[in-house]
Amino acid sequence: MEKIVSLCKRRGFIFQSSEIYGGLNGVWDYGPLGVELKNNLKQYWWQVTVRDRDDVVGLDGAILTHPAVLEASGHVDTFTDPMVDCRTCKARLRADQLSEKNGVKQCPNCGGKDLTEARPFNLMFQTQMGASADPASIAYLRPETAQSIFVQFKNVLDVSRKKLPFGIAQIGKAFRNEINPRNFTFRSREFEQMELEYFCRPEQGMELLAYWLKERIKFYEEIGISRKRLHILDVPEKERAFYSKGTFDIEYEFPFGRQELEGVAYRTDYDLQQHIKASGKTLDYFDEETKERFVPHVVEPSAGVDRTVLALICDAYDEDTAPDEKGKMETRIVMRFHPRMAPIKCAIFPLLRNKEPLVAKAREVQELLRPHMNVFYDEGGAIGRRYRRQDEIGTPFGVTIDFETLGEKDDELRDTVTLRDRDSMKQERVAIKDLPQIISSKIR
Ligand code: ATP
Image (cartoon, rainbow, N blue to C red; front, side):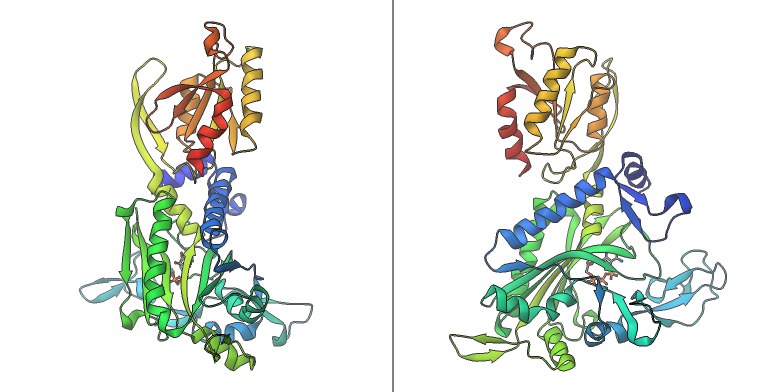
């Protein structure tokens, strides 16, 4: 994990937020490469969840939330973690995360046994709307994106004219005042979720739960996460929310242990019923064929953007050996991102920086590829070092413009370049005009 955290900072994937002021605990900023990786993930999720389907539409709800919404959803009363303080090292700990030795609870930080009683701690961030500080002006930063989907259910149904089963999808920020943010970005106080609420008839619930679990596993494989590091936990009844008839956690083997990436839950009609009761509005569905009116049930695949980015980074990290400039073998750090997720798809290298025709040709290749993908131009240092720098950030392809490209040795090779593959390190000679098609077919 140390190597990964250090690479993330060194190469600009993830920085501690407010670092120059000592950092803000549990809050992270994504650097130039991190934002590309994160956007690739979110775009791919949106593509397969919304755009590739006839039965799902999108929503972008507000972060500031009316207290009534979160009272109805149960977050105001029950969104609490029992919390314990260690009197020895002053650490604030989640009661369910204490370590235990010979049946005695201990502080996992210092091993101290002098702990306070557990007390509830609400995980929501509260803020004030407007100038007055009275209780009527309280608003919350949403602790999940799902609630705006339930609250807007009727509006979306009316405008989209969808028939059951259909879903509403959303990607956006969520905030939880986690007692113990840790494991890098895994448990943060500000994070992003990718959530789908898939509404259905009650009798379809269990079947759709199984369907979405399968779809979601397929998604992780398609973004390059190895299946052998993914695990499915069938959450036992006593650990599920009381209204859920079935929940699966999709877990990933992080270097710090097996932890939840996503929850796929059959939530029955609990959420819509809560909002019906609290708002007095009808949030139901009329089936034209059967002439029945009822409140739909819902299956919810709820994934974390940041946790998935972290899983992508952990899964991609690898070390192997490659020859240096003098042919001596050296250790190479290589991020084996799926080309679909890689922040930069292709790097472009003129063999020498001080040969004008090479540089001009390289700039031409850059302009040719730019409309199709994120590219990076690099003319600094020996070519081997330039390859190494790209390997370390997971760029799947490298194009080198050399004297043969200029047709100096063999006219047949004019306007061809070498295309290097990050993983095999093999190089092939291809025509410049074919590059957009060759690379595009591999990154879609
Ligand atoms: P945990 O038990 O790890 O706190 P949870 O079961 O409370 O998670 P959910 O409420 O099911 O999480 O949220 C859905 C998803 O949102 C999680 O699977 C995770 O990917 C993401 N998520 C939740 N809390 C955080 C957090 N503090 N930091 C980053 N991602 C989070």
